[in-house]
Length: 108
Image (tube, rainbow, N blue to C red; front, side, top):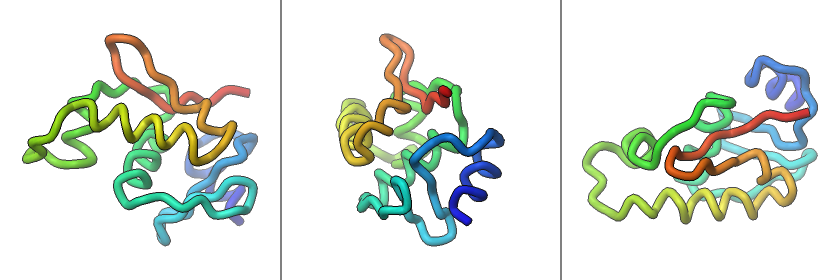
């Protein structure tokens, strides 16, 4: 069922090893649950919901943390680094583009 959700969710064939179960705020790597904080989940879900679209730090801060966030913009970098590590090799799908932002890249 998770494979179906991923396929439907990304509007592409199911070839990724990472999937989400939005109703439960859970992420799975090959059927094994990955433990994420609420903000980590929100960022990963948002990036996966918009595959290929590049988001600047400020956009992610506003979307995930809200317009009232007063912390440093580098907060996004910290979360991106963590999200690359937690799902093992599947973290490669989170791509940083110098002077542009980051995106979730779906590649075959």
